[in-house]
View 1 (cartoon, each protein chain N blue to C red):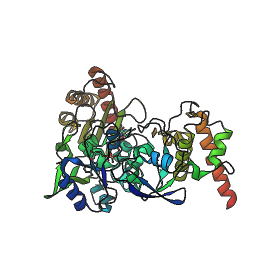
View 2: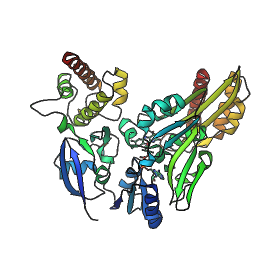
View 3: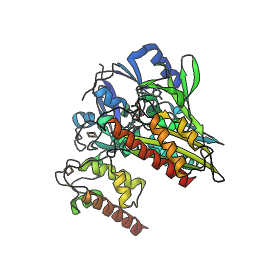
View 4: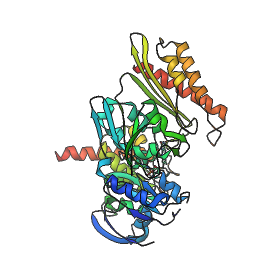
Length: 284
Length: 163
Ligand SMILES: Cc1cc2nc3c(=O)[nH]c(=O)nc-3n(C[C@H](O)[C@H](O)[C@H](O)COP(=O)(O)OP(=O)(O)OC[C@H]3O[C@@H](n4cnc5c(N)ncnc54)[C@H](O)[C@@H]3O)c2cc1C
Ligand code: FES
Ligand code: FES
């Protein structure tokens, strides 16, 4: 399990890192926590010869809650997401989801930026980011731009990010109302067989706002527009929830793998989506 | 590829060695620095046998490049206790039969140490959740959990007695 040799860089600014990756092209890759990239490098599945470590860039760290807007630096670890008091009150769904990722050791190293930039359909944060309608800030040689999480994912490992861009931060609005991240996995440390992120706000007896997104049920995360439409404006009756679950399962497009055949995954999807919606309603 | 000068603090001592950037931290510790407490179980980030403490975090040293660890402060099982003066966790693993073959034990204890630094009075459930990154093929875990809870109680009693 020895990866191919590479040259190591540890720049201390975003500009410095962008310059290295744009000068070297696809021979260079950035490393954040390394807990997706290093396993791939050990299997010699990457052709890189320069590794650009982002750990020395101070500007990529930190969680800030400014009024209604939450901004999280790309190098914030999953462990920091779980232990942040600010985040626990501004968007408690973040720690609920982060606690279901991998195991403690992986969470000390794995970063939110790496998790959302990776493009692996098994990663939990991309679906959650679509549920939160987050936006990603990308910095490249031409400057800075933001991309919506709902438009970022193109196919497994293919995203809107250009090879010479670095994802620097993520931002989204603080949540109010009910929330849930529900994940079915075979064991601790496993990626999801099916997972769902749900937000629900009630006003009087009615659902005034909702958001639903799925993890590992297609080769990209899925934001479920039809399921959201089934809930918003409804009384959240059993029939309304049933219609939303059906719409979300219909939006999924899982493929058969070692976690099971398509029928099983759709069944698991139905169960986690229902649990997530019901828990979010209880908390709303 | 050129080797790099790697400076680390390991168990309180400043050490320097030459290593290729691609070498894994576990290989540098075991093969270049002769620190053989942390073990290699799976080498694929799953078993936790290679767990060390790096800058206050429990990490799997098979999933960290030597180069990434440059400048870090690392504690291994050797830094927690030694045969003449065992750490409370080591004592309790011994007393409660928290080990059989002992292969997972250095990783278990190093991880448990960080867990108790962050949560000095954990519930059984918290111990199980906090130890989820460490696998044991022998014990069935019950005695490991008992040992960690007993160590927490001992450490808290010692703290109270000191006050
Ligand atoms: C045993 C195990 C179990 C796991 N289980 C889960 C799980 O259940 N759910 C889950 O979501 N994840 C899981 N993971 C993955 C883990 O959460 C990763 O740490 C995470 O996916 C990637 O974060 P990282 O910081 O380690 O990224 P890295 O591995 O450093 O990078 C991943 C990719 O993203 C790119 N990248 C990283 N940061 C940036 C950036 N700022 N800008 C542009 N590109 C960037 C890298 O070039 C690389 O291609 C698991 C990992 C392990 C080892
Ligand atoms: S040897 Fe590192 S996790 Fe198994
Ligand atoms: S005691 Fe043998 S693996 Fe744990």
